[in-house]
Amino acid sequence: MSDHKQENRIADDLNRLVEINQILNSELELKQQLKFILSTVVEMLGCEAASIMFYNEDDQLLKFTVAVGAESKGLESIPVPLDGSIAGMIFTRNHPLVINDVSKEPNHYTVVEERTGYQARSLLGVPINIRHQTIGVLEGINKLDGEFTDDDVQLLLLVAAQAAVVINNTRIIEELQEANAELRQADRLKADFMAVASHELRTPLGIILGYATFLKEEAEGELSELAKTVHGAAMRLRALLEDMTNMNLLYTGATELRLQPLRIQSIVSEAWNEISQMAESQKHQLEIIQPDQDIWVHADDRLQGVFTNLLKNAVRFTVPDGEIIVRISAGEDDILVEVTDRGIGIPPGELERIFEHFYQVEHHMTRRYEGLGLGLAIARGMVELHQGRIWAESDGPGKGSTFKVQLPRYRP
Image 1 (tube, rainbow, N blue to C red):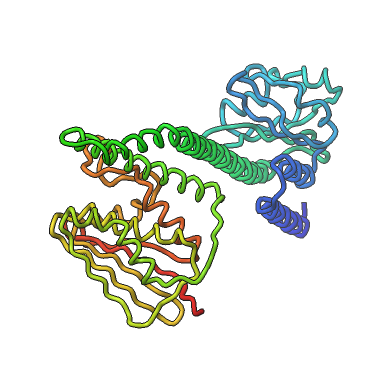
Image 2: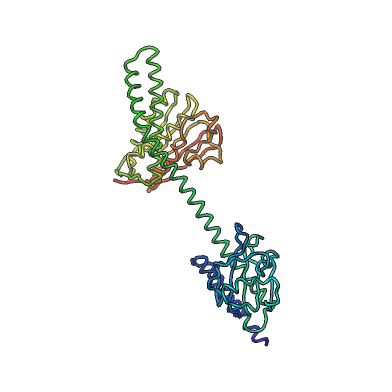
């Protein structure tokens, strides 16, 4: 071959390799991409046909996956053994193989010819490897002009490496899709459980709460104290059921906001009133720092639950006689509410995780504080529905914490 022809061939081959690279970035399905690669192999090598076989671990056989050219029809139904076949030799040795006279090769697997009626005269095959593991074989069949050369071998090795990229990308995507499907199924089961549990427990809880309320009002002495204990436990259980219901509504996207202009000072004040009895029992002091003018948000009534939850946590995690500070400030477009306590603090690595569903900083077998770990997850969901954000800051264990809620400011 003259130098000029050699240069032209190299340029053509490079262009073909670039085209294959472009196919790698396309959205075609795996078989379409591999068929394009094989069509390119036939042109680049100047041969009649090409095929890709993958190894099937269950059967311990090679199976045709894609083929183009004269021998492509009916191949997918023909398994090829590792012993007694040229493809098996290439696969087990993990090395390229050139056979320019197939009729003289004792390992030639003639079943393929018998079933397809296509005669292989010459063959070039290379292994397909992913992460140092051989997964299949790429073959070119019947050179049209002369014999397969070392240049052909190097070219087919390059194409096999590109085919491996396509296959590997597809496998990764399939694994991710499978993992995502499993996660979605687990999430659905979790959501279904919360929906069923909260629904089924409401009726018996209502009966218990009714009787406990009646006994608390009517009973005297020791029986009255027992009734108060039962009533308190029933109220805590009702709060847990409300958390489960709210979390499920947020999770399934069934929560619809009924927006109206609300004073943020009133929202925070109502939230404090709701947990004031709990705070007084711990002798906590509350300080609210707020601007003189009214600050408005366009919000649903349920936004109050966010601050009730934050204040409840501040009371729960602050030692008796502790101080809780609420600071309200407003910018041109946003408002900021900060709830600061002098409580147990939060480790740096937990500042984001505390907003996850069911997450507890303490281990569930040894923790001192009650709750399902849904309150902050619900708070984040509700704040995000209002186009805001919520986050936590803390200098570490024993140094208290500050929860910050940023919301769009509304001007009636």
